Length: 379
Image 1 (cartoon, helix red, strand yellow):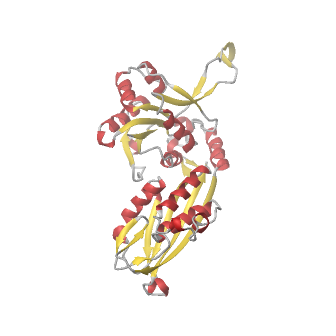
Image 2 (tube, rainbow, N blue to C red; image 1 turned 120 degrees about the vertical axis):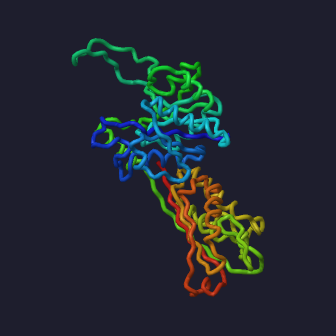
Image 3 (cartoon, rainbow, N blue to C red; image 1 turned 180 degrees about the vertical axis):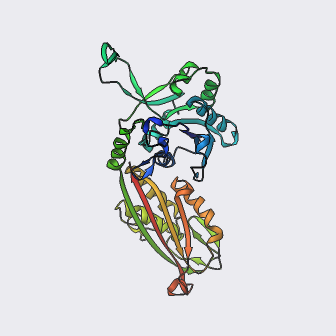
């Protein structure tokens, strides 16, 4: 079973100003929609993403691999319904849970997304919200006419999470224009669990909201970049391990482990971004237990350390330097392999190759070198 996210971006957002729907406005150097999608792409629990767009905007957005575009409806509820129906039309995906999110909440974090997804393991529906703490007035003609008791009142946020079958049935049965998907769920008798929301998870509505959102995105973000480099010489064998993929060759690579030069360089890049040394410090070659070990063990350790320290992997780039074997025919499999090991979309993974123009040890065919770069982000 897997979890999908529906990102609603079919609204016109005219109150935000600027002559564009707010999802296409620039915010801290990126469009609003790009910030929102990035948070979901970096969340390991999300297996599939649907972006719901207005028919007039279909030409604006070039989707990343793994993002499905669905045309929106005349209302927000209609757009949600279209996204849900698109998920239900592909049962082979085995999606049983869905998170529904407004694109205008661009400051959403992978951590809050993961909390909503996790809550669905014990609740039929879950959504973040904040208790109302300000006094509430009623008014007429600009004058206060009374006060409203705020006991038990919450400010709703997204993403709102549900079991796919139940929320689809609820939307099919609902008549009217609901405030959000929680209203639809409750009308169908579904209990909705409240999770603590975040003040930073604001919804961009008015022009002044962009300044506040930009402050959140720029002020809280910790970006780190690490690099790695590794070399292994050729020896006897009939294949080489590169980025977790066995590549047929007339020789193998020698090393204390399986000598996967690509994974070693990438592992060191992750350690380097965290200022946590290198593979040799965490897995000493003097320790016999690592003799012949598969290199994905090292990379998984580095990935877990990244998560434990509160970072997300934004993207990685691996360059293999060799005359032979030819990397191009295998690069796609290598990206897929790294995607599984890193829990990261292939659109954020680069694997490429170059030769050294017959110069040096790689040019003489004595071995393979690898360079890697990794970018980490802590929202």
